[in-house]
Amino acid sequence: MSTTETHVDLGEHNNLLIVDDDKPFLQRLARAMESRGFSVETAESVTEGMAKIKIAAPDFAVVDMRLNDGNGLDVIENIRSQKPDCKAIILTGYGNIATAVTAVKMGAIDYLAKPADADDVYTALMRKPSDKADPPENPMSADRVRWEHIQRVYELCDRNVSETARRLNMHRRTLQRILAKRAPR
Image (cartoon, rainbow, N blue to C red):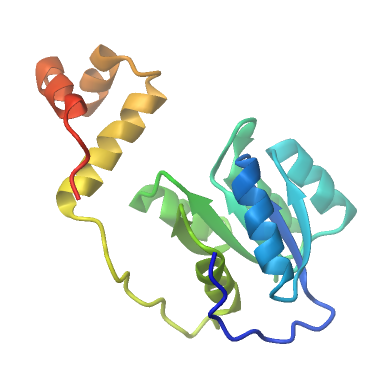
């Protein structure tokens, strides 16, 4: 996690809640955000995040979409009901348009694909509502997006090829050939 961003004095409204079940990532991001002036609280589950929100709703939040005990959108919704002006972003390894739209409707100000670094998170949290996000420097190719989607559905179907093929409306053998190949660039 690099530290090339210009840091803003956050004053007393600098409470940041990070909710992610990937402990190494959570710890790295927490340290990086503390070095940028945030007072950081961490949680590894929806339940733990909700408990911390009940004690004190944060000024900022970074929440993983998929957590072991539920959906990060529930955390965002709870934060927004407690503190409507909280700037919250969703992190996910399973980016798609439908979940991005849902995240924004629930109150997230941005939606970042993992692995996001601390600079990306900081920029998203500090962005003014009138500012537009920069286009990605190296966007995924259409083949890579398709492959990622197939992998995500495959994992959600507990690596069951027949069930994945059915849900993707794809022939099972075609799916097996795709799964046997390396990821496209």
